[in-house]
Length: 94
Image (cartoon, rainbow, N blue to C red; front, side, top):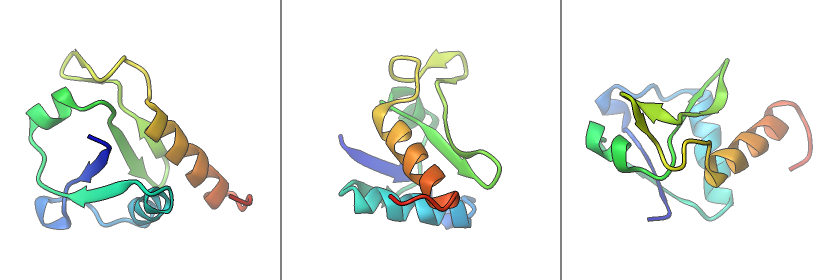
């Protein structure tokens, strides 16, 4: 539905620096970011799924519990945010 969903901190999500920057970069691209509790079903039916972290930066997840996410490859939003974060983190102009 064109929205990026992320679990809120109260649900156990770490409010890390990488997460915050990726949310900011997504909003710069006019992508809506919504915090909501996610179920396993939400993950099974999403078009794309990615995780953020200091070491991983932005990493696409293509399978959960043996179920393929989307077309089984990192999606366009994941690729866009990974590229933008890499440039941000490594001092290159956006």
